[in-house]
Length: 211
Image (cartoon, rainbow, N blue to C red; front, side, top):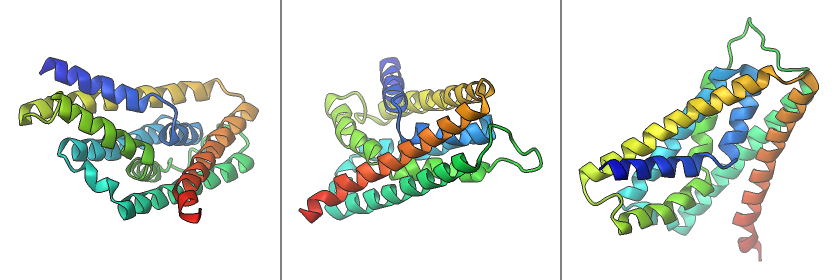
């Protein structure tokens, strides 16, 4: 069971570490609001990660391979990424620096919701679990028994939560070192990345339909 838990931890790091929409939104929110908004984006993304992980281990991943389901999820993902990217670019243009308005609490609920939305509609995470999840079950690493699956999920969930705090702390301390002009460029770059993710996803989804 220990080896299964370790496998879950390694899977969590492989999915969480590469830069992607969740990481870009974490940096964008953290640059403006500090540790808590960055953490809330990460915690929100755990909802989607654990949902797709659980579906894959339960053998329901083929459901997502249905054409209309994939298109619906992709359209939702495009909408979320384009909206957050456009909002971030607007904020970067208007912002003067990494100062926080102490009279106004950071939008933690909005940060959490954006993390949930990105992870639930993220085709990269869905595709990851459709392929890797089936492989884990076929290889007997997870899904063989309830205890084994629980050990995998425990390792995966624990490592994912640990990564949430690591990422939020990194953004928190990085923000302290940034000058106003660098802050604006970092915020703009993260927001532009979300727009690029959204446009790329839209092209991937709709190009076959138009050809």
